[in-house]
Length: 162
Image (cartoon, rainbow, N blue to C red; front, side, top):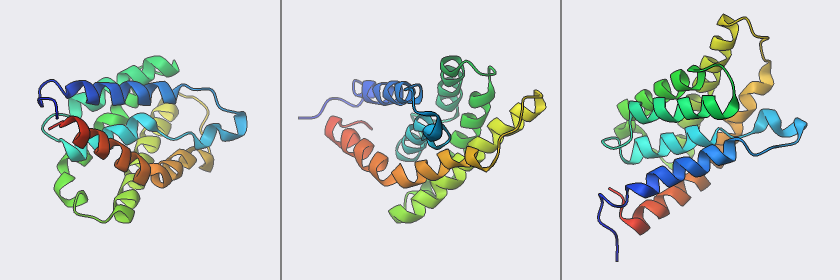
């Protein structure tokens, strides 16, 4: 038995809440640069799966919440995730037909773009710049994409989210 599509929207909200929670879990100093961008991964999935329900506005809202949770510059992640959501929605019909390994490469590019926007806004604000390790999160996200995709697709099918 599946829930009605209107009532199953809580699955989307819950997945973003879990992703935001995972984004602030403390990690050892050496693992910090390789922390996956959980919110971006979940946003990319929902933008590809349900572009009519999760799009640019969701990217902006999740990015703003991420800015508040991380205590950084307000709007930094919002700008990056809005851009990622726009590209994911715009290209969703192409990306969805890719095999999983090609989707992972596309996710790598989207996550790297998000990291670039964050680094760019840091530079504009005069904050110290990062190094190559800041893109470790994009690489980790690419490696985790098949599992994130399978988990969220299973949840979407189980609860009939459409």
